[in-house]
Image 1 (cartoon, rainbow, N blue to C red):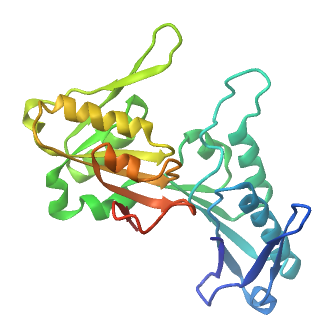
Image 2: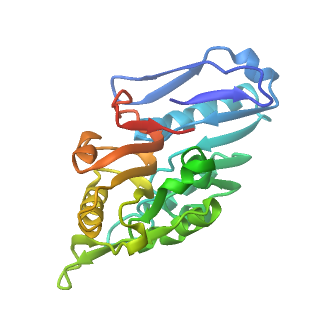
Length: 278
């Protein structure tokens, strides 16, 4: 849900958003006097589909038509297109650059992202700040809670980030690796080594994003196999939760608690295995 607040906080700016029968998105500010009086506004927009992206552009235009000199700050928890940060085949668009150019064109005073998937997005955006995952993990790993976990990096790509988190919270960590078919590069499995001193401990897999969840399902299987048959508990933290295959598939694979800071609008927030962290 997109929200607009005055900075400093004087209340929300109300607006309506609708889609015409031809498919066009339109917005209308319903309390324009507050926009006229404000020196700055903070727009929080979770850009989880194309209509939300167009809604943001329309809002910026509507606001500046009321108050041309107003300063606008964007909080964008999920930065769309960061997952496509390189051209993989001839004829493809570079989606992360297209999206960064779009955001830059709106001339925000600042742009705040949450645990963005690719550093390429940070390099392309103007006036950007990235809220690191340790901010959200504090509620899970602070105080005595950290002692019960061994952190797990799901692959080499996440290792640097998880190592930083492990250092901050003084937690042990291990790293998994993906097994690939040498002929075509297809991922065929996951392997992980668990040192003897960690056998039987509780594990927390940490990553920035989940889509369908196959990576974590396979990793949970590998952890149980490497745990020498000892009873263990596996939890999962992801900053952005798409959960396109649902949450139960993760629990059925042996993952107990699933933590996320930013569940997508389609996620069932009543699922007993899902915990939203702030």
